Figure 1 (cartoon, rainbow, N blue to C red):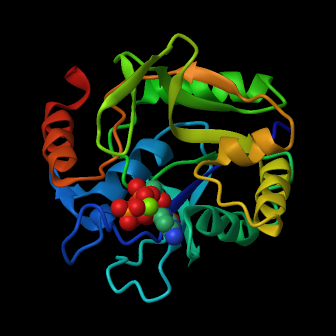
Figure 2 (cartoon, rainbow, N blue to C red):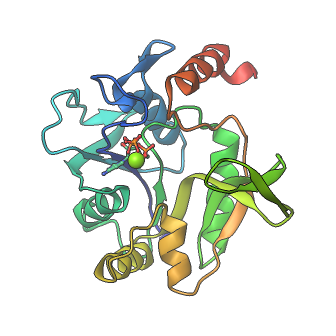
Figure 3 (cartoon, rainbow, N blue to C red):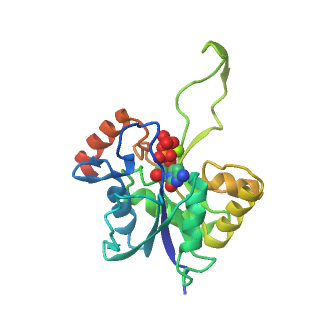
Length: 233
Ligand code: CTP
Ligand code: MG
């Protein structure tokens, strides 16, 4: 049997940089919350079997969904850092999602994920033992600054990529990598960073630049525009 594919959505953050009362994953754009856009993008993909969301312990806003797009949607309690939330979700996955299952970790606040990017990510991650992530080459010129925001150097950018999500790894390998990072006291900012520490080299899959993570109010306005345009863009 081919290994199963599940999505994990860390959604336990408080949106400090965005500000305001409502955590950004619950803000609406184009008629539904950002987390619903993220879930529907993943669960409408024919190869994804289900999703696990990691929520804040005291989250009063989770609508209690137990399925979407006809697929199971499970919930668990996240942790203090993004990596803690992802690890909690990995531990909470059903046992029939084996160690060789492919897990797609995707930010709840990243609503504009397209099916074609998912197709390519799943194809490449399935073929690579080291897993794969969506990303895009850096296009702007990069400046190194001093403490007064004055330029001290121009950095070469030709080998640099921005890391997006989803990030796709085998359940067993990703769980072990995140546990090792935590035991070492290292806060990893994405799943690939935990895997890199294990000495592996995940593949970079070039994805759409409009797969944006909503961090600030300006990002929400852009997300609203992109989602309202829909797949025509
Ligand atoms: N996240 C999480 N658990 C945490 C921190 C973050 O599940 N302890 C999730 C967020 O809910 C979000 C994703 O990880 O879906 C990406 O994190 P980020 O954009 O940094 O969101 P926040 O941490 O909520 O925002 P901020 O850093 O501005 O507080
Ligand atoms: Mg954060």
